[in-house]
Image (cartoon, rainbow, N blue to C red; front, side):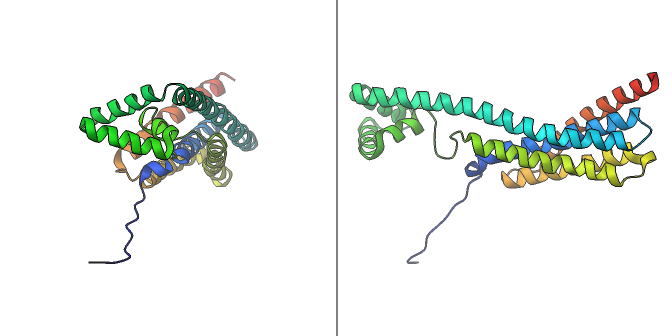
Length: 233
């Protein structure tokens, strides 16, 4: 028998707070910036407008992602805090009703009446609000809303994602710029899909196909619009 051995597990759910925002930010950074660059390049004969639009997309997009994530996740946090406040009030004013709610939850999960009552009593004795937050409301330390974390993750990864097609546009020959930016951006998206799957401990094929497909749709549509307006001009 091994003494002193401690089994430590790391689950993907522990990363859900920042992983979703990070993947969204990087994906949006690559697709939106590459699409804009290709659209402007299709309508322009020089490199400067392409680079200026790419830099503007990076700055505006990063700020927009940060603000959007902060506002949306703050709304989730506000809803969670309102539910917790209501649960705290009910625990103070109708503890037996709340106890029965926990008991019924555990019975529905497969415990016997007696065991469900024991579990409800012991968990409530330790931290009743935490027990109700987790088992009744579905709020845990891994899934609770973190607005600042989400905003920073989105802004940082959007900037990193947007910098890739921007750097490619700066280095690529002007006559091949659209093709090189488009092709390299698809490779960046495939890598992002793989890294997101790896971080989430999922199989990579579906995430890779998903991000590459929508990247093709967005860039093709934007390049087509740019070419149309460029031809009209």
